[in-house]
Image (cartoon, rainbow, N blue to C red; front, side):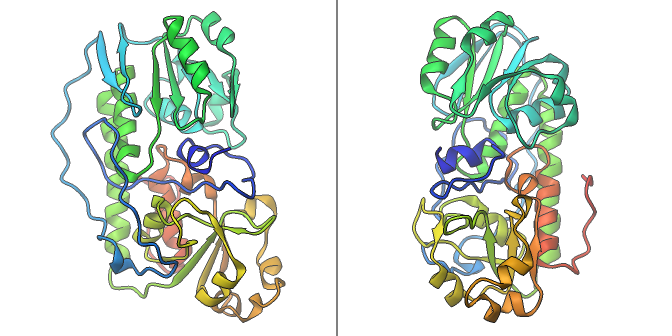
Length: 348
């Protein structure tokens, strides 16, 4: 399992010790093509000032409603022709499933990837036609599918995507390695299913939440934050070249990373030297508690432990690049700054 792949599509499973996800989004983008990610500073103690501040871009003019047939370019650079507005859609990533339901076309979703963190609840009625690493091509074809939204970077097997295309099924492959591409993908899905305005509204609500958090945390102290994704065999947090680190900065924290692009494992010595003032337990869903953290050798001296700032966090809404990102950034900001006045869950 590839860490970037798992993160980009919101796969909810216990991370393996070598592959840990961390993915989120920030800016509203009108374009629908892939964007090259901007590497984060390599040092594990890079300050917020080390990367450009996240600011809201002006809201672009509304895109005209998509006419069919339409040709779209996916994140792998493939031109995908969609001859008519799709009525039977298969989603092969959890994030795409959430987005389709949020855009009001959940009733058209005839198949989905298995998702242990399934959302929305209505999606439970949709049969699974794939798991991470495997796709039931024959089942998808038998459903009369006229659009598949798949995950790139090997989240879904490339051979399955090729086979579907050879059988005449349009497949839009998405993979967002950075903040810009993630919301561009939301717009791309909107165009693919004829829900351009709904996609723009969803993205605008996410943008507004990021603006709100940026304003609310401006001028506040910037605590050192260790976001724990897994500690079952070693310690894992966001890699420096993933925008999970940017997410923490937007929420008003200074994130700890391995210091090496693409590497999620963080040595215990790095954590102790970093002395986090806040520890966020993305692995709380797997039973990790503040008491367990305090019992780790040497960790009782950490500022976060001494000050009672070891907090569980809902990792799904923070790391899944879908329509709940507004809730995710607010949740993250409140976890870092508990006294921050922000709207509660469900706000838009």
